[in-house]
Image 1 (cartoon, rainbow, N blue to C red):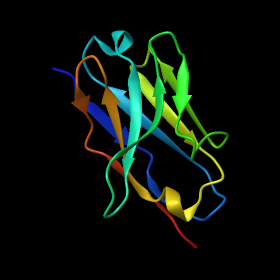
Image 2 (cartoon, one colour):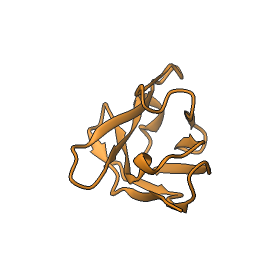
Image 3 (tube, rainbow, N blue to C red):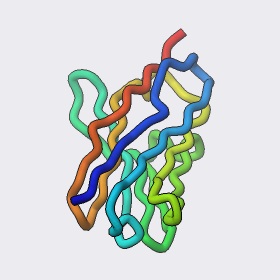
Length: 113
């Protein structure tokens, strides 16, 4: 069974940066495309970014040019570097392992002055 544990969330001012991490247990991390999703209060969960096993990436239009997804297979970890944060980026951020179908429990990001 794969466990996904997110970290790195917190309170940041508009224009600031955060880096989220998602550490995966188990030996199948390298065979999974990984994604970051977010869910704001009162809204549906939405895709933020995806990284394939071959390091191809794709982003939601709302975060293109500001967020960067990356992975370190040696550390079984996927990252989300978030720059130029906006209040509308406030949400709980979840990571997801596509082939396995596992979700993490999420980490809260709050962008506010």
